Image 1 (tube, rainbow, N blue to C red):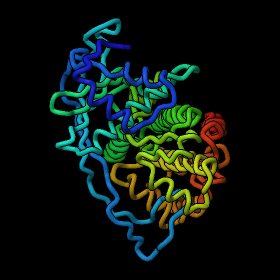
Image 2: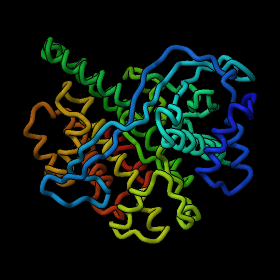
Image 3: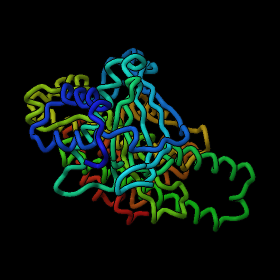
Length: 398
């Protein structure tokens, strides 16, 4: 038990976990319950920000009624979900870890967010409890959960060790804005050496970022967990300064939609937040528990491939040239995951020159890895360990 536990404050939260997740051993129940803490265990600081989730409200395919085996629909109409998350700075107020900085993630109570908010909070706590209980030790590329509690108003608070205030999306946004400013004042016309050094640092930083994110994903897959919401905003960074790349530690967060893919769980049909995933698995020909497990892992790899594409383009382009949705549409709609055709298209656009050069390193190693991760056949996608061992990811090309 990390902190003093107040049974009156935590009883509803813990009962939600027990209702939502049927654990196999008393040890796992003890781990989950030890993370149920008291509000007095933390001091809450300023509001960092808030965010919501997108819900797919329409599956209109604009004349194209197909979908890839990765489950990525060609055109999606999305709406804002009902669950709004708030983030606060804070620190631990009691025990041996007193004074340790934390980030407090707040899920609304049932009155504001419905039962879905409770399930998301319980799922995230349960996922971290299982991943942090591994006999192999913890993974530095996952955020560390240190406690959680429910307030009298029904809000669910989860406390994480402070892994950084920035995300991969923040890094890409700031860097693309710097690109625009550099071009505006024509720095690259008179300081070519500095420009080359900047690009080298940027390539190294992006590779280091991707290595950390995929390492976290590999750890999850090794422990029978899918992330299922991997993207630029779900990777936390302790720095966005490219000169500090040697000290960069990317960490995965946002496990509210993570999925337990233990074979026993798939056989029992305990499919919280994963009904859509398994429908797509069956449509792709994965019907047995082991086939579904393989499909789920490949689905995460697809999302990791989109993350790779995002980080290969956005930080190397001017602000506003490309974003998450436009890049995904380009990959899936325009070129139907044909990366060679996409490369030819990008070569004709001077604004995408540095992104193409980055993926061209090592005899087009980046394009080859991206093609493998986004393969329309989920059975042909590499596992996370294979991605980490690819020559583009090892960094020899950079």
